[in-house]
Length: 458
Image (cartoon, rainbow, N blue to C red; front, side, top):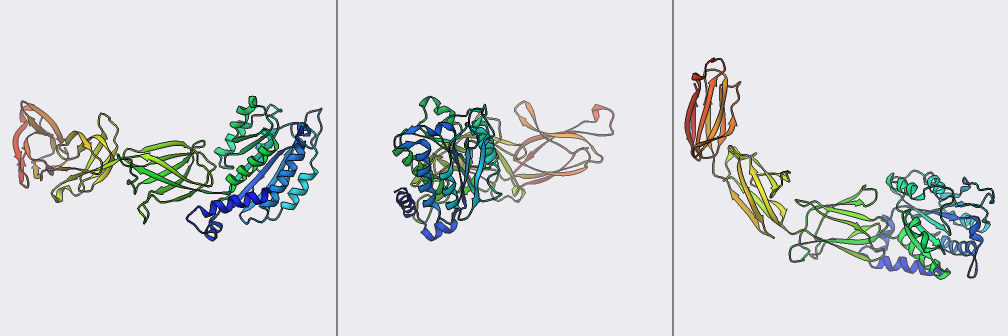
């Protein structure tokens, strides 16, 4: 029965993707499932039609048999609490009974039938040793399915062990199937992994089918990056997918609108909980995303954008000019943008600082949906400063009765040319070897667009 239901689940999943079954089989990674089975004394307890162990043996046998012909699946079996009786308590009682290999389903089934519950419940120690049960493999999906009817009894911390295994990238988030466990202990298992409590035999069958389906199937996902009107038209931006628990970067995809005008469909592993960063300016985030296996998932991220460009009338002096973009009221640099190229930003208000001489600061620019905010820089002029000897000096802009420093001259040079914006200025300088302040030079000058001039300092 389980075998038939399982294959119906697989066929239903494949038929709902945009990929053929041949492509799916070719692209599926090797998935390695380690069954960690509770063989402690409490598994002798009665549970409807038999002992808990009898039910687990029967259902796991059917499940292993249903998986034996799948090319991209390998299985292994670890059991704990089945070698040493209690009392006394032996917290080292855990063993990898069947290691990972191809075509080992019969061996696992045979071993399952031979288990006789005897001992204690060293869950943490079993999980810790399971790290070595998976042979080295760069592209494998390592999954643990823990089946137990009781909590840790050896003073271990299964939650801490699970976190370490996940953070090290050894396993994906484990599945935990509880057999008739009290709701009072549910928190003890949810920190280990994705917990399912089977209150009766039928529920145990359903849970096992769901867990196996999630363990084997990738699912499909599309990201709708919405504009301000809720339409998924924003695109062509990188999206980083990270594991919500380990913070490890799992995927990077540049968002794409497909040939039908819809956000592209991606295949994803449904087991991790994801955080998404959309690398707009500034970035947009969505965290704690749980995918529903076997169906097409749609995630909506609001990121309405407009564009900003600073034009220079093709002035050759400004070919490499850049400007700083900040969110209004914030000091942190958001972007260092080149002139004459438009860049997208989330809708909102921004301040910019154009690295001309003098610098141009424009505050509270409003970026609107699908519109381009354009700033035109006046054509600059050229000013060459010469002197008979090195010295000290700076250029100031005249603003009413005030002088505002805008540029410090190089004290080692006697000839230097700078590109300046039109306006009224003053250069104040003094030879380096002069020992009296009266040798200070004070010269006013005006810069006009497209003009060039030479100023002799002293």
